[in-house]
Image (cartoon, rainbow, N blue to C red; front, side, top):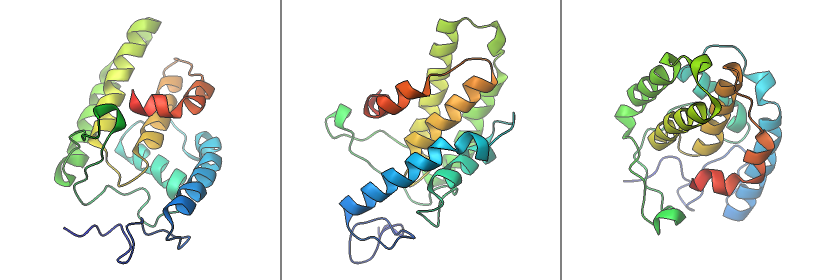
Length: 176
C-alpha cells in the first residue's frame, strides 16, 4: 500500500517546506516544533480535555510543517521501536482511532484527581497517557502531542509538571 503522506520519489513526509532530505526535514521539524511547544500553552487553552483538544495541540505544533497537522491518520502504520528490538507497537487501525481516543480520554476525565496522592496520580496518569500514545492517532508527532496533552491535563487538575525534565529527557520519555 502506497503511503499518501510520503513524496512519490523519496520516502520523506510531504511537507510545506518542500524538503526532500530526511536529515534536513528532521532538523527543520525539531527547530520549528521546539518553538511551537514553547507557546503551546498560550495557543491551546481551556479546561475541556477531549479529542478536539488533542487535534488542536497537534495542529499547533505541526501546522507550519504538514498540511495534515491536526487530523487523524488515514493509514495503518508500523514503526520499529528501539526498546522493542526493532519490533513495533500495535497501534490502532485508522477506523478505530477516533473511538479509541474518545474512550481513553473519557476514562481520564472520569477520575477525581483531587482525591489522589502524588504517587497514585502519577501512576494513573501514566497508564492513561500510555494508552493514548499507543493509539498513535497521527502519522507523525504522537509523542510530542500526547505528552503536551498530558502536561496540560495534569496542570489543569492541580498536578504540577516539571516540563524541563520531559524536554531534557525526550528520548527516555518516548521509550518509556
